[in-house]
Length: 89
Ligand SMILES: [Zn+2]
Figure (cartoon, rainbow, N blue to C red):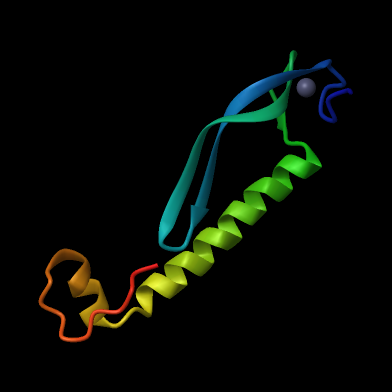
């Protein structure tokens, strides 16, 4: 595998990966990638990109669910004062 920018040799490595989303930042400390030995350009495998996309999708859904929780349900997480505590998933 050659670098698209400088044609240098790509080496398998782990990189830090950050995703900036509305409402949160996802930081993955060690993620498998290819790094150019000449210019340092990073490339992610197609299937690794898919992994990240799945994580983001799952997080987005969870956060959406969390923000639509009734206040009562949220309160019951911390205090037992809720009149009708439902099961917390
Ligand atoms: Zn390069």
